[in-house]
Image 1 (cartoon, rainbow, N blue to C red):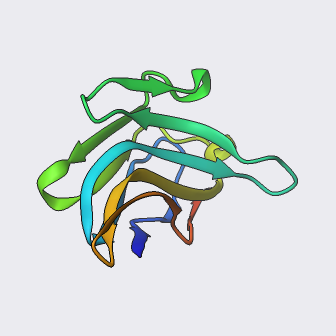
Image 2 (tube, helix red, strand yellow):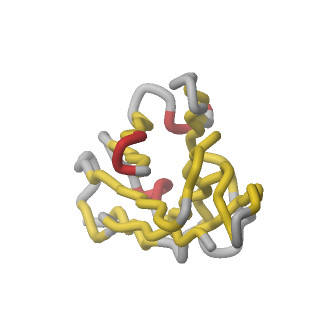
Length: 123
């Protein structure tokens, strides 16, 4: 079993910044892609940013130049630094992590989602 827990959401004024964190725990052998998605009310969940095990990154056009994704493999953690936030960034942000873990002595593949953290941008 692999657990994924996000933190760092909250209320921020337009133009402000927030940093989200997502920590994976369990008998993890290897982490592959780690990403952040978001879902606004009445909209579908969308990919915000993705980082590969090698550090390659991908961003949604709407956040390029404002958001930065990074990872700390020693801590099994991925971060999302969000700057110049605007009301359109308001959503529940979800972390998604994939990789390999050990279960009962066997190598298993996992893809786990966190519970989500609310980000609200409002004056």
